[in-house]
Structures are given as structure tokens and as C-alpha cells.
Image (tube, rainbow, N blue to C red):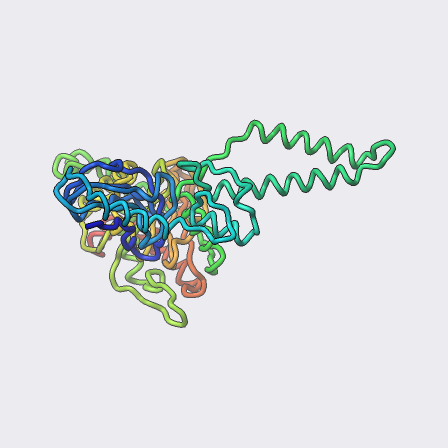
Length: 420
């Protein structure tokens, strides 16, 4: 009996994925629970495991293809692993599924094309018969269609310039236009076109959405980090010996953020239509700049975590973000986000909101600066901090007071114990 391998539900607001690789080839035996294919979503990578024992009789979607929830990736012929598929039923089932997925309109070309590429071609009225496919098995991808559109636009521009050339002589404007064209072609020869990963495409989309769909403002303050640094100096060895992890800055700011969020709950809320959803729990997202792109895993119920548990959790999440092994559940949701550009040397920045959240705290590099303390100028380790917030739900007064409360708690770290 043929069993379809389909794209499962991918989690909150995720409807598309990209095939990273197949672990099996057509004709390979498969067992229940054995990994078949790896998918990349906008939030994480995950594997689809076989739900039946049998033989992988057909692969319908190849490495690099974009797929949607419910789409059929391949077919398993159920039976004992390694057992040859039935000579009639399996090929027929596979052919029917493949025809359903790849069938073109009667008036269109017969080559292979991804659904996304087909949609773009229809919108831009592109003749797919003139597009060169660079995907697996010469499949036409979205990038192929976009490149074709760009080339046609360039050809049209060059034809326009040539048509405008006078019969005798060349005008200065025309010479300049032709020289610019030659210069651009020379430049293009030294450029490299690289397909953005699904995660990078999602980052780009969400950053744009954040700026277009929120009334985002940022307020700044500075914090004297001397007390925290002294506490860490005194406690770092005993802390690491007892808990097996270093006492970093992250746990202090997670604790301080929770203390401030309890006093200013609008910063821990989101907008839903005409309603505000005030969240009386604290799932704190921690932005991690992994090699493959920014990811924001979440510390669930962070208010119940100790300093040691927070440090261990962040260390584990950062490592698995780099290894690309985070689960969807670990990066979904979140009520407030903390991002630390200081680890890369940033002195000041304006963090972008992580919708639908209403606030994000930006940390920066600690730098010795001359400041006035009790009427005297002294050198202190200072850090600029920034709070970006959605002005639709958080007023300027609350935003400023929220950041002041962060400053107070960090400059008196023992109060974090009292705040819980």
C-alpha cells in the first residue's frame, strides 16, 4: 500500500519550508521512526521520520525545492523494509501523485517548475519556456524566474539606448549612457549571486514587517556596571565550581527585565485587533547571532529560573543555535526579547521589535568612561542600554520608567534577589 510523505504542520504562522536534503534514495528500505528528509523553515530545521516500514518508492520533491504544508514529498510502499515494491500498485500511485504536483496548464510548457516560480511567472507574464532551470533536474526555481526578468529588463533598456542613437555622431548623453552600461556589465562580472537561506529571507521579511506594522520608538539610558562586575569577580570561581557554568551578564539582565516587566506590564503585552493582551508570565527571548542568521530561542517561565539555570539554558540554546538543532517549540512565542550587540563590540544601536512583542531591550559594550559621581569625575565601566517599544501600546513615560528601573536593579544587583 503506498503511503504519502507529506509536509506536516510547521508551527505558528509557518506555512513554507525548503528541502535541505534527503537521507534516503529511491528504492532504499525504511523503518518506522527512521529519518527520511530534512526541512528548513524560517525558524528552525527539523526532520521528517517514516511512520511506516517499507521501501521509498518515489521522491517527488528534490533538495532545494520550496514546499508548503500538506505537500507530498515522496511515496513509501508499505511492507517489510527492503521488500521490493509491488510491480503495479506502487509505480501507479507515485505517478498519480507526481502528476498532481507537477502538472502544468494545458497551454503552458512541459518543463519542471516550483510552485513559487510558477506563481511569479504568472504574475509577471513570463514565458517559462524561455527560462533556464538551474535547480535539481533542471527544475525552474524562483531565482531563475527573477534572473530572467532582470535580463529582459536590461535588454529592453539597452535596446532603448540603441534606438535613440542619432544617425550621425553620438550625443554626449548617449555616450555617457553606453559607458555606464559597459561599467555595469563589468561590475556584474565581479559580483556573486547567492540564494538567501530561508532563515535569512524570514529575517528580512520580519524586520521589514516590524518597521511597517508598528509605531516603533527607542529610548536610551546608561548603566554603571561596576557593582555587577565586582559581584561577578568575587563570586565567579565559587559559582562555576558549584554550578558548572560561568556567571555572565545575561542572567542579571533577564532578572532585571522581569522585575521591570512586573511593574510595567504593557511592555510585556501585545496588540490583537482593538484589544491589548497583557501577559502575566515571562517567556524571555534571547537573541543569538548564529552563523546561519539571527535566532531568538525562548526561556520559558524565566521568572522561576535561578541565575545558574538561566546561564545554563542560554549556553545550551546558543550552542544548539549554532548547530542548527533548535526545535520549533524552543523559538516560538516569547513575550519580551533581550539582544546583546555588545558581544560584537557595538557601543549603541536601535534594536528592532520582534512582533507581536511590544518591547525589546538592547545591551551594548561596556566601556570605561569619565562620569560625575558625588561631585567628582571618576572613571566607571558604563553601558548604554536601549529599549525599543511599540508606541501604540506603550507610552513614552512607561518606556522611560521601565528603562530607569532596569538601571536601578543592575546598579544594585543585590536588589534582584529581593525582587525574585
